[in-house]
Length: 379
Ligand code: KG4
Ligand code: ZN
Image 1 (spheres, rainbow, N blue to C red):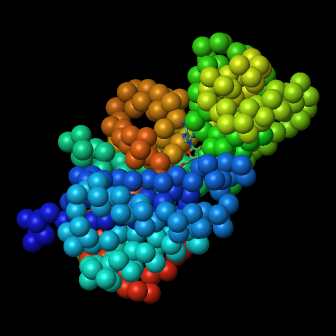
Image 2 (cartoon, helix red, strand yellow; image 1 turned 90 degrees about the horizontal axis):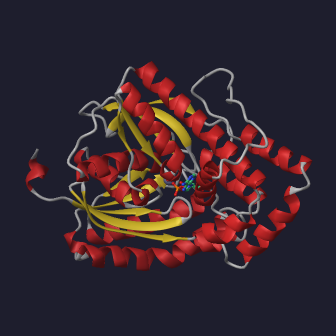
């Protein structure tokens, strides 16, 4: 192809939720820079993302974040070949900040603007990391995207050469209610651990294993009527809520943790001493239940599709128990499994630039009418 002789440098822009991110990626695989401004500190006191605050912060951050990405890449705007921007799914007000910036920049530079589906970005994150390690995931593959906003299983295959899409997707299952990360965040909030909940519950669950804390309650596997590959996490979350309500002995330690978190003491070292064995056991049982459902559905999807490549992406892909269980399963079943590093699992713009590169090769360009889409399925 004509373009392959020249390096293609794409600026990716991501603003779909609570991270303002920009990155420059060369040829869809070499990350020249990746800058992420997280808004966690702003949303923390509300226990979740507040859409109005998120768009305001994106407005504040977009210019400095892009500038830093360009500086880190050592490039001027004229060195860019295209601008890729997330156009959905996500918070419309947040998406519009990135889209408006991307449109303006692409127009001013007279470069193509490439619309990117955020979920395709997560798929590309798994490829990006593999490329950096010199390996190439074989398609078709099963991809689990598991984050605070999404829990979805896809079959990913090569797409036809004339398709505007990089890959052909078949959605195999998705959550019917909460995303897995959302369940982590809600359970953490109700137990007084603050936001976001995933990292601290993950660390505490590991402590519960070493302290061999007994689970005060057991959660059975979740069954979903209809599609067995669909997920449902709100039942586990509600079971934790009822368990805590029925056991008043939790209240005092929850209150102490809430105070500690409000005072900025959020680390494992701060919070572990404020957890009873019973709480550690509860956290471990919650994590075990979530991980079991993710693992079993992913396994069933792999069987259904008859593939042996598995891609895992999204913030919850950083979960240590999920990684350990999936790696065990991969070793047992002979799967090749690809997890991006933590920086590429969570929302970032390098994955958007990588997805945009595939769009660039297929001339999937947007005009100035590009709009934000709150929901935007893949495939
Ligand atoms: O991909 P991401 O940065 O943003 C979304 O698109 O949502 O994912 C953030 C989510 C949050 O819900 C957070 O609690 C969860 O990922 N998370 C984790 C872990 N690290 C982050 N969940 C479980 N275990 C972790 N280690
Ligand atoms: Zn995401």
